[in-house]
Length: 448
Ligand code: GKR
Ligand code: MG
Image (cartoon, rainbow, N blue to C red; front, side, top):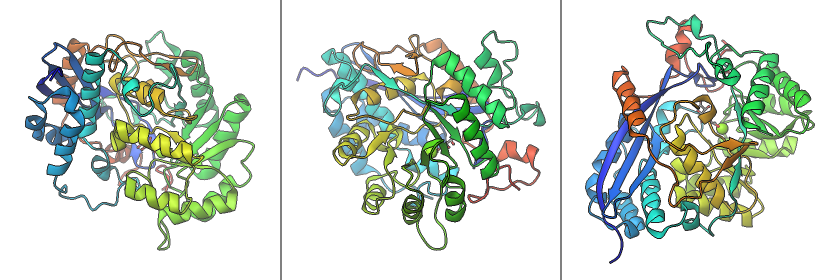
């Protein structure tokens, strides 16, 4: 066989800095974590993948190393199949997924092996001399991928004690976006400033506002202010299911001139599943609906489609795999539905992966999510793909098309090793804003 053999698989957990971003689940902590997979093969190539952080995902990756090392790169599908066949149900996973944005369950929706898939496709692409997107679905569809400007409300980090919560201070940066992203942004006018800074730096034409933070009327006022400032932009709001059906209908029904679509407006209620409730929202408002919460695997997707509950499926490759995300784009395209990508905080390896799936997705993808703009400057690659004019440039080099900067990886690993906990906990910083704060999937985080 001509295929190179995978010689080593390294799993390196890493951490980076974040802003005090607000969502339904609370406030982002000063640091986020990720896991990197680094494969080397007998041809002298290095393949890389990035996935969500935390000990659970790290342990899952380390457990399958013997199934990966020593195998031919060309048999990557067989390697993944073996991993799936030998997997046993995770303790604590009740299968509920993230319908109520319970952050503790995100680790079960994310599948660690997709970081291995990414690294193996990187190696295979290098062996064959083609970019990864040529190996996916129907091959490369585009050379740049439309991204959206992912807007968040941000709380004042100075309301947390520096001894416990060391958020990054970028007040001395010469970059206006880098300065602004670490400041408090809690009003419609400040969110418009945020969008302006992002438009200037990355050229985004479209924006998504993370809702589920303030009361729904203020969040709608923010959307109206954004539309006024950017009349051509597609504006979308994502409260992660925080609103009741009645409230979602009341808030959205007169917003057709402002919002292009709504992402996960409501969740389960009164004995009805979120898929049933979202269908009723669509009936009542005629809005297109996107989701990364109610269709996170093929079984959930079946019920979502059967009910015609959503129009845009955000097929995060960390949930669905690379092959799976592209299979999803093919299905959606043939049914007249739309494909997009969801994100959590990530480094630029995931950004490069988004470039490859975005390049291979068929049809006209919805602009892709990325949190990377909140991390830009802490890159782990020597050649981070750029977002220019709102479009992520797809690397032309073989495989993932990028090169790791090992010094930066090891510095990010050192930061990880200093953290008291490796799991995401959005309640911790909230306690300083609202003493005794507890997560409630039906109440925006600052409404208590
Ligand atoms: O990372 O805080 C966050 C996001 O709010 C994330 O938890 C969501 O899953 O971005 C995501 C979304 O679109 O729902
Ligand atoms: Mg979402």
